[in-house]
Length: 371
Ligand SMILES: Nc1ncnc2c1ncn2[C@@H]1O[C@H](COP(=O)(O)OP(=O)(O)OP(=O)(O)O)[C@@H](O)[C@H]1O
Ligand SMILES: [Mg+2]
Image (tube, rainbow, N blue to C red):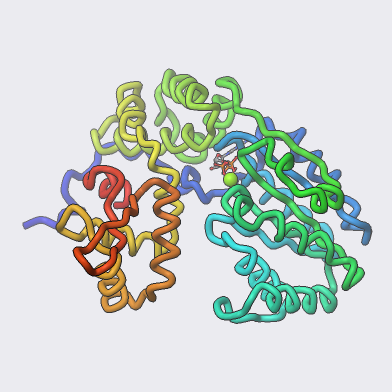
């Protein structure tokens, strides 16, 4: 039998470098984000002169370049001045006050065990690190909504009052999809969070076209992309909220579909197939699951019955994956909040009750997305 991967040898290679279309790729320059980059530079400028930073609140719909812009600015900032160092945290991963403070303490050179220390101690260690630091830290809390509704006010208060104890400041950047988040700040936070708000708007079809053209020159060989394809993808992504992530992903998928069909260039039907393949609101949350969240979800998926009791699940995960009951419970709460599983109580005849866990969506749908 021939090797699976050597079958169907291609006559046409369309990709020159498909990695430039991967979500983690950071482009050299950002088109149509000049104003936002200027504003960031303005907010951070005092830091390079040893001054007090302006805190920044960044908001806008998904896929509008908030994360990538912030990463570019921080790269330039650190390249320009060694008085500043930034720490980027995604609150999907660091979703508690304790985990953020612990990570920041470690960043400032005071390693704290990630589990097992309380918030007060994590904060004390963070202040200790801050006192000793030879630079001003800029803390970026991306996807801040993920943390805010639980402990956001307390965490912000922690970060904003450091100067009382240490005479040192921390620059705080919050990134959110919700423009109105600051309205929910407590008074004590609002009064000390002097901030510059920077809005990111949905991209227009024209802007998306420019971005896609630039990327496709790097990704594909000459004449690899049919003329109508980029306008089509730009229009599609514009209708989906002006989301550049969708645009780039569609281009990557269309390229793969065209290559598979052994076409000499990407054409409209390939792009349409790519759109169809991408239709899933589940995608974003699934892609961002942590390793343990994936493990728990996979275990529920693999379970043959309709639902599994919490006791059975804890035991399975403990023995097969070494995941403790407490962690499993946290993960289940997260999966429930993402509407991936449902948790209900079931009465056991005469023996109290137990939690029962079931998938909130058809198994094959979840399976496809998790793959
Ligand atoms: N102006 C631009 N030029 C080139 N690429 C861009 C531009 N804006 C966004 N991108 C690309 O689009 C994708 C999405 O951008 P990014 O991750 O920054 O969005 P976001 O606003 O942070 O979205 P979310 O709210 O979902 O986190 C990334 O791959 C990024 O590289
Ligand atoms: Mg982002």
